[in-house]
Length: 453
Length: 143
Image 1 (spheres, rainbow over the protein chains, first blue to last red):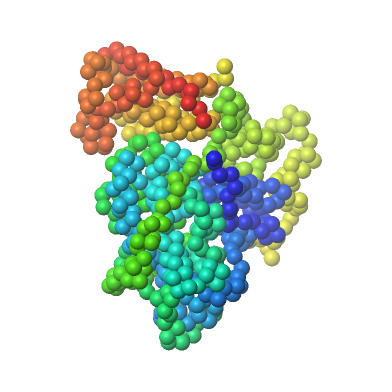
Image 2: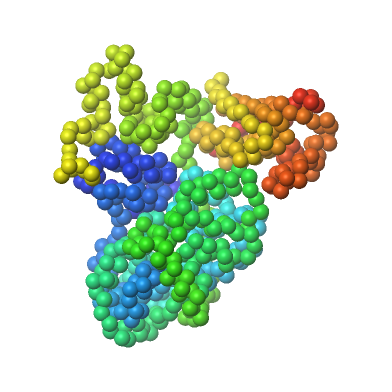
């Protein structure tokens, strides 16, 4: 059965939203509409990519996270940290200082996500060799990409590699280590520090997985700022026997960067970053316009996780720092290696199911009638996607009209035509615009960027 | 019966745009709840036909008629036509130039691939004038 409810981490704060429509225009799945002067995200169309968060000039879009103080409900408080965070901090501080700060803010253990990357590489290699009939195999690394494939390229879901990702192995390993030391699930909280909204959604409603080993999720920007306020130097803070601290392999440091997976997989591979690039390439794969690839790595953000929406440092600086660390890395993390058998036994996720959001109706005949109505409407709509109707494009408005969510008079051009034919009076037209953009939106208001203060 | 039409003009020699028409048709098929397997067959057949026009003809037109039972695609081109249709239908037969093959086209799988993905397939050609294809795919395995 198709899953109908999805957790989304991206939310709109109505009190801050000024209905500037930047988010609506940037959304790759046309999931946002403006109504009553606020942006509304349609849940089943959202893929949690965070493009809206990135472009919002009013900080009205936020990434919902768990309360930081929830970590204190546990005696053992493990931070699962992506190297894109440690790299941001190691540009400024020594590892001892970073460690002290993590302890100062309340964590008892730190474990880096990418300590598991070289292990996943092995699993991935093995998976690719066993699943040649599903070539090209597509990585499940980026949850926004997985969700985009589910909604926009449903026929490609069998190509997705059904393996857990570095975060899952790191969390499972820490959980297991604690268990082996006799520490119960109730006593230990494992908190993932996320660089993006998609990873939160993936932890809260995992695709193809029953339950995540992660207890809670904390936003990377919040943690970055707390760490910077709490930097001290207590040598020895990183001594810990239950989950020994260790640093990633060469492969691990660059795993969350573009080509991080692709360059480590044998065969013909390609690495893509950026959602627009991903859409173009997946279109070619789906139409079989291109073939012969063994493995495809796709990440939603430019420069992959270094460009995550919750990163606080310029992405290229993070990339440079991680490449430097990778070059200096000598060893593979030995402690997690002892648990390869355990991780291997728990590596699989279920097949990823398509999510059909594009059909206009379950009944093909009715859907065809709707397509025809849309085509007729498109003869009247202006076709330059101004967005004044509160929908991101003329086509989106036409679909909304056919689905009963909007009216043709929402289009400013159509209003002029209707007024000229005496089918719409100016007061009503004014009211329509207020319904979309909010009351008093047409009045003078200097409270916006660039206006006279 | 409710039906919709789509029409595309194909420019001979413009490989840059090859695939546009099939992608457009795919978008519409998704909207009307057709199974992924059927969409795939239609798109692959149509893409092959589109590339054939680009690779061999001067220009062509694709007419797509979709109703709730079937997708009916007519591809009519002005071009050199095909001397021996039976030979052209054989897998691996290709008249494509080396240049075209280097671009990843012209492996000689085109026409047979179209036939394999279609439920009904008719090909007619007048050497020196052009070729016309009629490709029909049934939509019976709707979700």
